[in-house]
Image: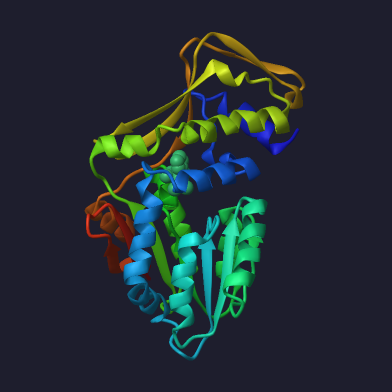
Length: 316
Ligand code: AVJ
């Protein structure tokens, strides 16, 4: 039994049925997410990019401050993706008086391969140690690698975790850090709920394709027989909790058969919803509370002028 089939069996035994957004990112999914980042409705990427373009030098100084000139600095990025935004920060970090190594970590092997190639071309002087792996592998790197670390967790990837998981994960990230280390976390901030919802419900239907790709992947890799046109992409935002959630809603009663689960079948009721992603939105007091809960101090907060997004430097 493969791990995707196992995940399906586990997620479909829950109420509501659930699939993890980490399985969005096969080659097709990574390409679709790149398209999403360029959509007019999807503001987070270009907003964080603007923060790096306008305040990159100050962010780089804050990240390198603990390392000083005496020890090497490893920039470990969780969920590096195509690295488009990070390249701006890396250029600024290369201007700092510190010996730099970049360790991009991503669950998508194709994204890591493309990123490595583009870094060799665009930043040939930067030693790079790519890792095609889940976040947990990065935690091992953090605990065992000598020298100072700047850990990057950008793009509001943290929003994919539930509030409880956010605390657990940040605590795990903070645990191996020393006073020389820094953590830079990107948070998408609470704003007009209609703007938030529109970012996950674009007019061109790319986000819907991204969501459907999960079913396509289960068909290809777990031998499932999901019929894509029997499903609807449905995003909803709860402004009281900041929970932006994506669902796949079944348009009719249907039965799905999964070859990799020895032909096991799952009955899905008409208009039953499968939860596929959460993208939590944050307030600044909430971010401060999260940092305090895991024993981190807020060193500096960088925001765009409109207050749509925050990049927060944290330290032990
Ligand atoms: C990559 C997890 C930050 O939640 O905004 C974009 C993924 N999902 N559109 C997000 C995503 C639908 C994105 N993250």
